Image (cartoon, rainbow, N blue to C red; front, side, top):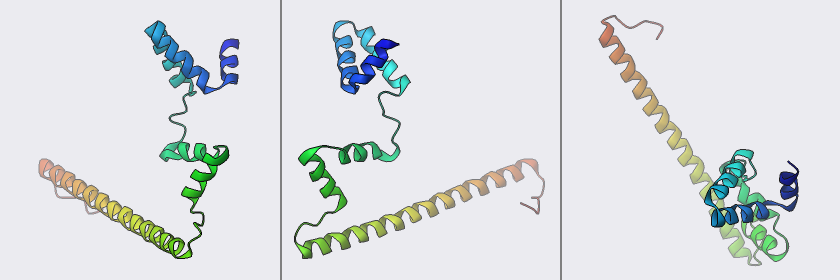
Length: 136
């Protein structure tokens, strides 16, 4: 596994280049490399739940790109106080609406689950012909 360690030391771009060349010259080799990258976790697709992978990468960008993305997403001051207040109020309002919407979705899920459970109990009671248990 010295070859794998050497390629890991060179980084992900080398793995992707090797995979692409494998597909170009002999497609089963490219497929084998892709399977290895996915199986070993070197692809990194499933490590970051909720899309955090891009945010982590964006924050580590060097130079101007990193500062621009960082300022844009972190809410750095624009220099216009009226706009900054408007943006802060809009973001606060949107976050509140998101919380309310998530609570609404939770209530809908609970109501649907309760209705399905009640239907199951009704069908079960009807099939057995027995009265319901008092502790249910």
